[in-house]
Image 1: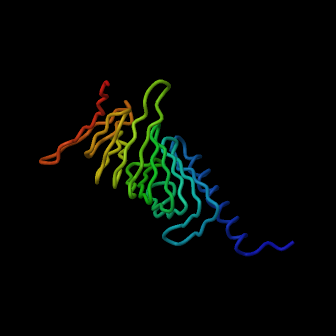
Image 2: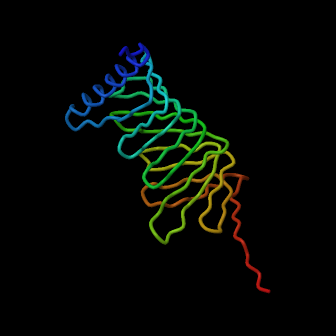
Image 3: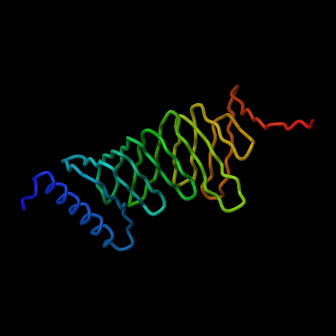
Amino acid sequence: MSVPNELRFHRVGALCLIVVCFAAVGQGSRQSLSFNADSVSLGADSSAFKNVTITDGRVSIEAGKGRITGDETAEGSWELSDGVRIAIDSAHLSGAAATFRYSEGQFTVGEITGEPVMFETSPGAGVAPIRGTAGTISYDRAQGLLSATGGASFSRGPQEVDCDWTFNLEDGTASGIGEGDEKCVVRIPIRRER
């Protein structure tokens, strides 16, 4: 049975990526990104993926399309599109596109965009989730924060807050940020007794 050249290329490309990941893991305590895809196109300056899943152990990303530039084992960036879904600790985000930079096997900063970007936490039992939307949500690993801008709002239970906000990945809190004339607007439904 003959295997089409395109299928051979996809198998060889996937095998090369697996070898790159295992080689990086073998370099002492250095971490590496782990990724897999339905198909891959390897180029001189970048590689393109379809239906890609990427993780660094803390951040997991799924996207219909992805392009990596840079050294897969040292530093570079991922451009992602076509239904981007991201999980960072207990936070889950979805949007149209994202760009994430990595260094030494960890995502360091990222930005996800959409119309809007959707955000939700999955807290423990008995705790209401925090939900939010924004035009852009940025990730900063060093600060342990997600920052939302552009028509941003968030809520927990019946309370809704309209303004830019941050979500602290370490303690699970959201904070509204009003600047200048742009103040946070808080809406709490009032129950009227009859």
